[in-house]
Image 1: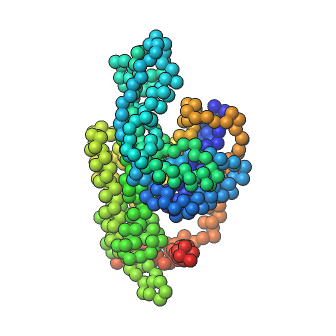
Image 2: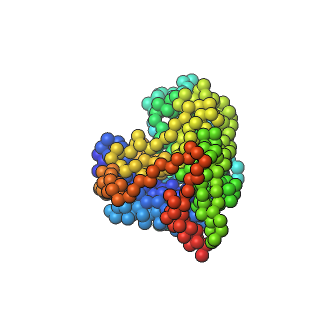
Image 3: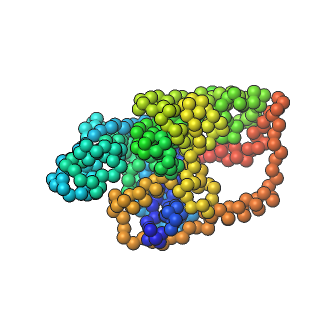
Length: 460
């Protein structure tokens, strides 16, 4: 495929803590070149569901504005949108069609009809089918076929994984996108989008669990023998951990988030019992001392709860550490917690690793775009390319040629970093081996002041 003749696909990740818009195009090597990138804080979404449409529209528009600022040549009209939330359900079905002429080879149109028939599956009132995913096909008595096109037979059928969601939740997402001046090209379940960005064919064959720890939800996708076996959405994420810290330690939410990122650990036993964080008092109140051990105990308790859900879901589908040789791939913003790999391996009995979307990205991009928090958004672009290459959806015949902005190239970032290092002094590592206090105020003074300003702005 000539990369100048390929479409620009835009992924829109409407999350609980952030909204990200990324535009990308495949190059001549089949790797994604990022052509535009914008993000904004998300305020209208809770547990993956759009609850305040106006705030969500405002955040989408801000993300789009930032995306256009990164590349003024972009024109965005259609987007692939991720969907999550505890309203998401999945079910397994089986369907068949009897062919009119068994002597003719099976055509793609017949498979499309077979898949479309599954959209008539009975589901509870108030729900809507989001996606119908074939698992494996059968032609007459031949089972386990990956693609039946070209086979001969009287009857062709398949096992299906059907994903459903609440009609109102889906309507709210589509309404927010439409009112932002965009068209939803497709709604994609977030764990499947993330899986596409961080998982290889080898992982699918070996058997793997994708755990995408987002802000409001943690999403699971289980693959085995090259087939999607199970999906689930856990109604807990990084935001819940932050709220637990806020409640448990009596601090502001912004302080809780900063402590979680800088000093938090998913394993309390490795936290230094003699290390303390000093939080400045507000409006003349005395400073507060927070134990790093207590902080990590709160984080571990919530993360263990999320991992218990993972273990339960694996038992539901009858898969364990003997069948899932690929282990657990952790992705999403929450996967950046310290020692999360060790806790995951302990809780599940499976090997674990962090899934980064680097395999599908062109190698010259800046590190920011390779963070696990953008796995869903990049996976949405890959889903768009899958639709384009397999002709699942209609795309324009001619595509605008847009160059990769220099700001996204790694060389520029390195130059900026080296200049910064000459100006900014790196503080000496803090020794917490003895009973010394980690003074967050000294390290984060400017950051926290800005965070407080943001909090006050929201309250006004």
